[in-house]
Amino acid sequence: MTRIGPVLRRTPKIAALALILGVAALIVPNSATQPTYSSLVRMQTAEGTDLGKLAHGKNIVTILAVGSDARPGENMLHTRSDALHLIFMDTKTHAAADIGVPRDSWVSIPGHGSNRINAALFYGGPQLLGQVVGNLIGVRPDYVFVTRFTYFQHMVRDIGGIKVNNPVAFNDPEIWPRGFKKGRIHLSGLTALKFARIRHTLPHGDFDRSANQDRVIRGIQEKLHRKRADPGFIAKGVLSVMQNLQTDLSPSQLFQLAHAVADVDPGNVTSCVIAGRGEVIGGADVENPDFAMAKRLGNAARNDATLPRHC
Image (tube, rainbow, N blue to C red):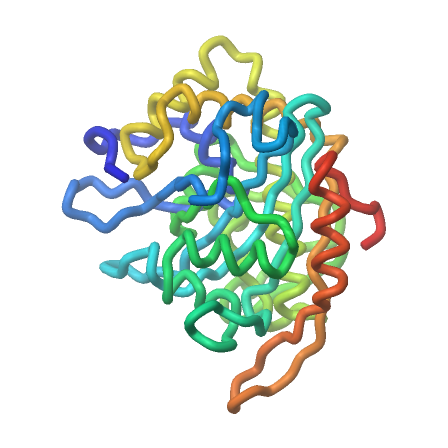
């Protein structure tokens, strides 16, 4: 895996590929000595990269979108992840499904016992995290996209902000005291980041936060879907992203993924967050996930990238 090209200035076009995560988030550093800020890797078990001829002849692309909790100077590929979304896309029907995984879900991590699921990135990088999420849901991702949260703010700003449907008013005295009202709201880069990160004041904590992250993903995708027909939008977006992306994919494969993301029909997107119950293990607050629900959601999305409208 190699870093491609020198660092260039951000432009709004980077959003075309950044959405692959849906949870895109990084600041483009102005120095080649800065730590890796985004990584798109192919899982070792994936059997193909042609979006029209995926493993077993299916048209489903699965991408694990990961927001790394890395602090400045830390390796974002070996820190705890702070957002986890397994995204399914059907390249024929343009449907998409998003399964949110609460970061505190208590699971088995091969070679490391049991721990919060977000520890898998720390222990074994994107490959191990993809394996653990795949074990939970029953579907291994084809790709894992890891990125820093901070870029999320700049990306949303550069595409002119987004709109989301917020089901309940909430705030956080420390993160965003002025809060967010109920209903259809506009989010700037800064407020989108706050909206996606607040959890302590939400009724269901990490579960509600994961749902809010999905709402932001939808908002970004809706904006990109509207802009996809702009002349050169996707091609220029891929070229911009390539200047700052660590990946083992070729430019043509990146272009295919960017098209798959932008072509998703916003009206044909479904999402669910894996439920669970809070427990205290070893003095730490964790979530015991509903394993049966996780497998049920995986089985629902694996063939056509759709989930039940009511989880």
